[in-house]
Length: 286
Length: 289
Image 1: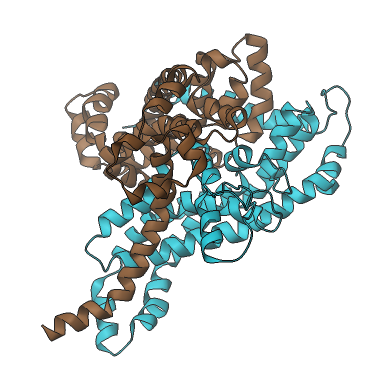
Image 2 (image 1 turned 120 degrees about the vertical axis):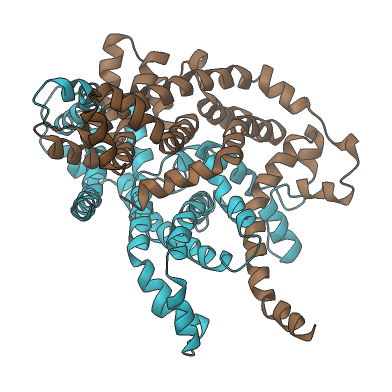
């Protein structure tokens, strides 16, 4: 008993530090969430933490802020746009990358190493290097402000990482497996669809989550290629323009911000394992 | 399995074409445009670069990016490391990790709104609705602080947002590396009488050096490209400009494609050393495989 007590006491500072840091990390989001459910006059006249004086008084909460931002402020439309942008922008690059990564891992062709090194090099090219020329081409072709334009752009920007990650994963699969498949007369296409892809489901899952979150949360690419076109603006673009137009209307801004975060949070909590695995594969190995 | 056919090119072809169009061609084109004037009509030599390296606005941006580089990298990596090591000793590790990792799922724009609200500033005679100013008012005798306006605090305030987002990323990677250190090694040192402090500095830290280097380079790349946070929270006002935001302004507000291109090239030049290190590390890893 006495030993237990000394143990607990000696680990007290450790626990205090950890709990303290966790609280600091959590508080900003909690403040946002609470404020988004408080009526306008309450948000503007008292701090969100004052609700803890009587947290179960449900009359102090409201859904009106959400109703307002989703309809009147256009966050509902922006949510659909985000989905419409993100889903193809996740599927297309991963499909294209999977074929390329398979060839880099299991096929022989001249320039294989050099080309893959170029892909690794392209991993860190700042997007800023590409914006002006591509926007000019888009303007000429009428692709600026269109969904197709932004799908293609995200495909281009997502490819280096996708090819790199999948090439490493495919390359790590057992060699005998492929050799015996080829001996049995399997074609490359069969080996790709029947061996490489099914065995790489975890890697494909990680990559999809990554690309999904990256596109969903992207501001720069949407800002440049969709510009001020309200009709096609995704959540990030809409939210950043609300920051300017709503100013100090915190009851609306907090609700709008939460609308933009809702889906990523669901993805994060349900698929955190794959997300973490993707991060580890992407940076420790590389 | 020698393939002397067109088949491999059918597999890599689409990816190579897209990469060529979206990354290689525009990068070369930007390099070319950076030598021309605003509308890309007249050749101006290195004028845009001279402007980029000497104008007052750009110097502010460089100064701020360096401040970001030092503080952001140091804070994310060290906090991530500390949390990775400390969390390994408690039972609620998974929960605490999720909390610190959570901001990674949120957009920078969303994080910008969250923190703008944290920093909210109101006159001294009314109730504060921003948590930080409420703390200032309740626990000190100071007046409320305009965190994002005040020139001594605003850059720090922005860097804090970056640290809040990225520490979880560093922690996850460093934690995996920490758990990879053989337990016997640490136990042996403890048996030999080393205290926790010595174990950390003499064993843990040296063993984790390669991973720390990887994480730190990733953070350096992030810092050079930092844009969203600044764009949403201050848009570079009150001396908070950064290189990437400046490029956006030159491109869209001033329509000066020459200058914007020169800024992009400077960003790339800053990143090239990192790129070379990446390629070399990949080669070494391939040699092992």
